[in-house]
Image 1: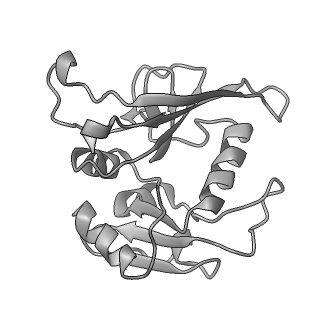
Image 2: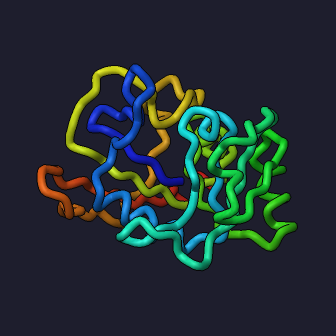
Length: 195
């Protein structure tokens, strides 16, 4: 699961704007990670609100020759003008809200390295089922104070029950564009008992 956040855990502002929470270096790094996966997975709400293309691009914003499968999970129909339906890569609509069913459908297509980029509801669904084996977080050095959280309700009501993944890497991504601040990339893995 990959997400970008502000210091106060917001992935979008209160007015819905989320472009861009992370800096250019973080976005380039995201494309590097996308290229390692065989599937990009988002929910129907992300497609409706953000209209992502979900392609892998180089540092000059050109699509790479090999593209992962784009998978959209959810019951809602997709508007035909959504960029995820263009001819840049194959797209599949997984008509389910169950993460296990979605992953099974992808396994049947021989897709096993899934890069989850969905919004807070999809992230929470996978976390609650114990189906996240790595988390990549890009933290931008600013506060919003309100707006969309990175993950929806996990059913956790006390600090003692918090989901506490193990930090396996912390990297400062220096800016590649004048005027941008560095971002921090955290890579985390769940403890074995969380799976």
